[in-house]
Length: 228
Figure 1 (cartoon, rainbow, N blue to C red):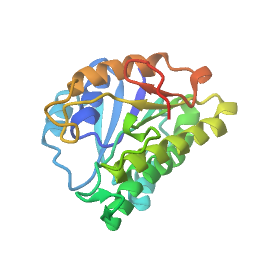
Figure 2: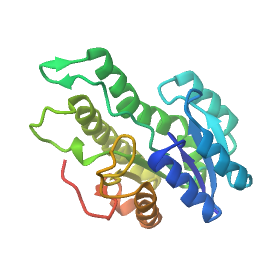
Figure 3: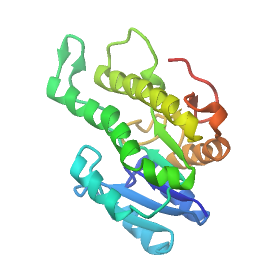
Figure 4: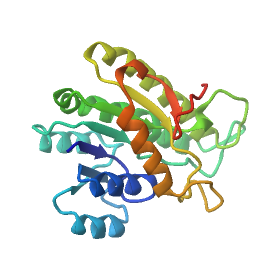
């Protein structure tokens, strides 16, 4: 049995990952914001009380991260998945930017994954585990200015995670940056190619076989290497 901690676990890919891990009898700590709609997550957790524990943790709040870290202080974590994220403000082009929205997007999509990874690093070290951050191919270098806050936040988190991979490689802890595909979520829309369940199933396979030799890579859900 593996132990996974998954942020942003109340909907979309996060919820699908919770279900996928719990259904194969891995222990899951599912973190959500206190204000999130947790109806579906709680209903599933009630059917898997041994495998799913829901914890309130806003990834943009260092105090909440610290509180959950203290609660899980003695718990080895095999798989840490940074999934929580936002799509950014309504106005996010280079000439019409909601700067408060840009700051919030960077805080959640870029800074929080590194903060969470550092906070729970002792847990991951105890299990000789893995750190996974869900990014996006929209974070690849390019000239597009649409969804600019989101693109910048993903490109920046890719760089942070690659540096984390470099620092943790001597300890044998692999860090994976992964694009989960274009998924039918609130963010991806109904026209997307994959369901959350299809994406989660492929992500599990990718994470299971991911080893230190591949640390720092930016891969798609199907294992394809992505340039950035």
